[in-house]
Structures are given as C-alpha cells and as structure tokens.
Image (tube, rainbow, N blue to C red; front, side):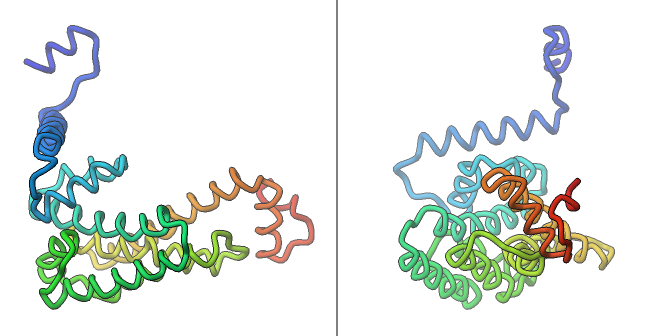
Length: 231
C-alpha cells in the first residue's frame, strides 16, 4: 500500500526492508531524545554514537541481523571514540594521554573489566568473533600518527597509516559480517587501505593544491618533472 501511495504521488518508493530500516532509525532516535537523561545500555550508547556521526556506514549496519549489527556498531563506536580524541582535543599532550587510556581500556575489554560503555559492548564481541587485541591497538597507533604528522611524502608511509586506521578495521568487520572464502580477508584489508588512501589524497589536493600533490607523487616514482604525473 505504501509503495502504491508514493508511486501515485510520484515520489521514490522504498522496498519493505528499506522502510523497516528507516522506521527503526526513527524510533531509536525518538527513544534517545525522550530518554536523554536516563542511563543507556552499552549497546544503546554505541548506536547513538554511530547515529550521531552522520556517516552512511550507520545506515548500512541496520540491514545486518541483530547480533552482527550490535557487533559492528560497537566496533564503529570504538573507532569514532579514538578518532574523536585526535579531532577534538587541541592539545597533543592531552590527546596522547587519552589515547593511552583507550589502549588500557581496550585491554580491559578482553579481561572482562571494561569501564567505558563502548568497551563494555565490545567485551562479548571480541570473544564471539575472535577479534585480536592487536588489531584494536593498531587502530590506536594509527590515530596517534595524526598527532605527529598530517602529510605523507611517499606511498609507503601513507600505506602504513591507512592500514592502521582502516585496513585492520576491514579485517575485523569481515570477521563480524562473515565469509566463506579466506581471500575475503585480504579484500577487506585492501579495500580499507585503498578507500582511506583515496580520501587522504583527495584532501591533499583540496588543501595543498594539485601542484603540491603532483610534486610529491613525482618524487615518489622518481620523475624529474611533476607534470608527468596525474596528467
């Protein structure tokens, strides 16, 4: 009925599953607003963190079965928390201290003594999906790199950064979503690396100009003239 109604009005139609996702999100946001002063469960905290990010990732999570949806949302909330430390804390020393705290806190998720709602939500996840502590520590290592430099002059350094902040996240996401072909893990890692590399290069063009990027790429591949690259 709803599809026929919107078709009659000339509006885009949504399949039943898409309507369910939209309704689920609306009900959650209404509940969050109505109960803003009440204590949330760890899973609710993670969902609010993901929803407030404004990322399209959040909506893709809603199509997953509930157990996987909770797990991937908790993982995403962790990434948002440590990323926000670097983005929102202007004092580098304070940011390093906060990242050090998160390094200790994620370890507590593995021994059952987590204090933060995100790591409390992750505690059953890391056990169920066998997510390595080293992967979470690698993500924090990548965030710490943002405190040292924001520009990379060669692909080797950029690749390391992208692997830390995105590639290992892809590996963990693959374990949560599931796969049958072992090669999927490599695809997930490479997709995370490549996506973040593309974003970083685009930001370089927008902030430093195309000429600067060409010069950096030329130096990487050993060309004398920067005009030979990206032409």
